[in-house]
Length: 402
Ligand code: AMP
Ligand code: MG
Image (cartoon, rainbow, N blue to C red; front, top):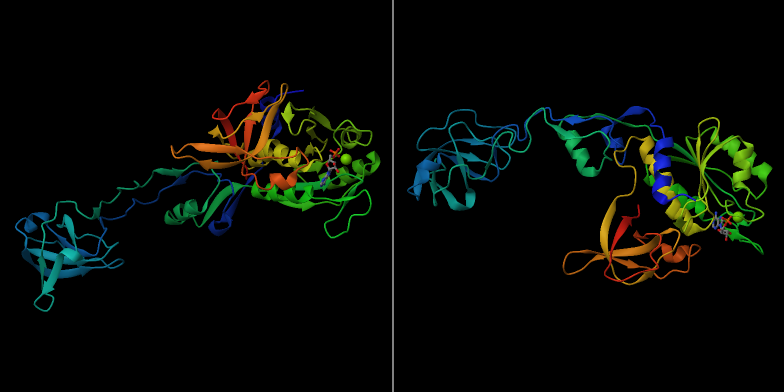
């Protein structure tokens, strides 16, 4: 049995990055960026007014109220490109370029126009620099703004657009096959007969895989027969970079997933992890190169093991800088039992307390089959192996679920 940390390390070592491709900016959401994004302009590209008001020489307003001659107008998209001189003002709008010679903008609320709008009375003096964002204040042209390996979010799309990236290089999406195994399983649209249950794992696995950026293909349910499993895995895996099964990896007489993988000549990297829930997780590679995750059948074990291991592979294949779930520290809200020989990854909800600390509430749950309780979880709290009981108020590691 290996530790969770060792298992994640092995997963990273065995995962190879896929190629990259160019996609249009509007198709880049949640994809992993595969190039550095460099600013092609200063931001702002000119001295920009932050207010509607009057561009002036600040020193002309020292004895406010003062009257200045209006010599022009600078609007967003249509600036006034002359030199402003002593005693002059230019009517200016938010986002418009500040004329040469002006060094402050007095806001419209502190001024009013007179004499058929040829003169403005500035009611209060304005300090130099007021309401002007200087050219290059936010970004200098040539600066690297986003680094290769980040997952593109909506705000980053605005960044890409601002610097003219109509298309970007991203990691190719892994093709993931999903197959539930178990002779007791029926499809969602069937009424389970005696001794049967509906397959739920295919849905959670496919959804988590899509959230990790994969293209998912679902394969038919397969019963607990080694030959059938081997044929099904062999056929399906040809079309996949990663193949994820659930069920049939424990020690029961009908647990045949490993036997099927061995029959196909797969190399098994691990088959037991010191993890609760999810001990019998299998990680292997088929002779054609497809990576296989044989997850346990229990639905909660599926969610935990998928997100610790399979998700890591999917993000690493796309070139993500940090393919694992982000780890944070949180305060444990109530005591929970750990396990002597395994790390526990337990369902929890997160809130913050009055001190602004992240607080993890472990959920009451009935074990690894209790997927109804797990549906309320937003995070996993980690109780390291060897800790019999983690007391409330202890600081624990917290992983947010995708
Ligand atoms: P196994 O790992 O095959 O021993 O399965 C462990 C438990 O998970 C059993 O109670 C199975 O019936 C259940 N199970 C297995 N596969 C699925 C599935 N696809 N959807 C829901 N439950 C499952
Ligand atoms: Mg089974």
